[in-house]
Length: 378
Image (cartoon, rainbow, N blue to C red; front, side, top):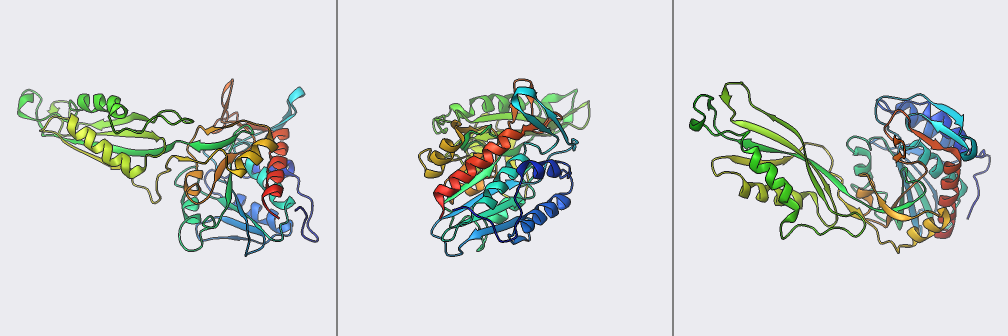
C-alpha cells in the first residue's frame, strides 16, 4: 500500500542526500540527527530519539501481522570530505563527499521507500543508529531489553553500499591481544631469563595453523574461510634487557557458526599448546561496551531476499565488511542493500577522500525497496 500523510510534502531522495552530505557527522552526529528528525516530521510522521541516540519512526499498525525494519547509520569516519556534485556524462550525476555512499545514500533510499509506503494492517519501522563506525552502541540498544524493535520483525533491510546487490551474509570481526609473560634478565646473560618476545616465534607459527586444526569451522559456501591476522606488536622496555612481557593484537574475521566466545576459547587453547612451558600466555578481547559483530547469514530463499533481488536486478552475494546486520540477523531474516560501492576499479570509495554515489543508483535503490515493501506489507 502506498500513500502519504495529509499535508506531507513529496520526498526527493537526491535533494535530501545533497543536504545530508553537507552535515558533518564524523565527530558529532547531533546536527545530522536533527536534520533527519526534521525531515521525518516534515513528511507527516512522528519520530523520536531513544536513550542510545537512535532515531525511530513507524508507519502502520501497532498490532501488525507483518513488521519490516529499515536500518542504517548516520555517523561517518574522519576526516569530513566536503560535498560536491558533477555530471559523469553517460552514467549520470555523481554526488561526492563523506557519507555519500556510507551510508547517507542508502539512508536517502530507505527514507524514500518509508515515506512512500503507508500500511494499514502491517508496520514498517525506520531505525537509524548513531555509532556504527565505532562501537555500535545504538544498534546494540535496538536489540536489547523489552523495547527491542527487531524482536517481532519479519524482515530487516540494512542500508549499506552494495552496488544494488542483495547481501545475505557477512564475516564477523573480533579483536583481542595475546599477552606473553616471561622473566627479565640482563641481555648479556639471556639464558637466565625468559624472553617473551622470542616466544612470538611460536605464537606466529600457531596463528598460521589455527584454522587447520580439526575442530576449525569449515569454509563458508558464500564467505569462504575465516582469517586470523596479527596486526600490532608491543614489548620490551630496555635495549639491554631480556623482555618479560609482550603483547600481540589479533584481528579475526569469522564465518558462521563461530562466535566470539567460541573463538576466544579455541585460540587460547591453541596458543597455550604452542608456546614453551616457561612462557605464560593469555588472550583477552579488546574492551568494548558492546558485543563484537558476529558472522551472520540469512537463508537466500527468504522472501525479502527474492523480492529485493528481483526489484533491484542485482546479484545475491555476501557483504565484504562487518556490519550491524550481525545484531539483527538472530531475530529476523536480514539483508544488506543499498546504492554505492565500498571500492571500484580505481580503489577505495567508502571511507576514502573520493567517496561518491551515483544519483541514479540512489533512486533505483529507493524504487527497489519501495517495491519490496509493497509486496511484504499491507
